[in-house]
Image (cartoon, rainbow, N blue to C red; front, side, top):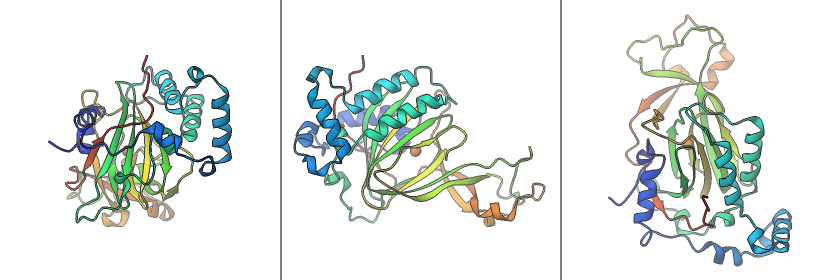
Length: 307
Ligand SMILES: [Fe+2]
């Protein structure tokens, strides 16, 4: 077995990818040494903010410097300490994690856009995506998806989870949905009984995101819990999931196809305002796309101290 797919992520809290990553350490490590990488980054290529941060770090003894990814891990340990299905951090905690993620730059996790995993792929099938596992436990997971141009993470959900996504570099198109909740308690179904398996959802986001930008957050019931990422340019996304996928705890990853609202006439018992219809779509569960391949590779950024 040479590859892990996103299907492996389902229910294993990324542990399958973790195994793959370890197994592939020798032959698939395409990520250069982080420290070497950081040392070769000129101060000119970083913003004023980064230079201020560097000066601040240089002024401290080495033992006192806590790396941005370690700070993120430490905060996740506190914030997600009791995370279970449906967990949502407090507004203060969300602000804290967002601020920490907003500070993280590609060099902080050992990445540059020039690395082979981001190169355009001449292939008839979908470009291979690379996942860099950083940490996974019962409460949360941290990892990075590396997408070459045109790479797609197809429409999938995050049941009962809060997810922070930080675009580290590049441009990515995000399309996301939440389930449509009508103002009445009625359930909206298609009027045609031959399509009982589709469910109505409302578009939350349908736009390009270009780094540097703020961290995106989705919640169990809103914020775009079902999303699809398409790489407009090569890009990297740092994801924090709390809690992570877990089959044993009922948090399975489900894939969907989306259809325009007009594809299936809706049950007329629930009137939907005309202006809302453009933002609605029917989602239908599907098998994992056959051409989706996510390879595990070794994360070579700063080591996380777990104690
Ligand atoms: Fe996702």
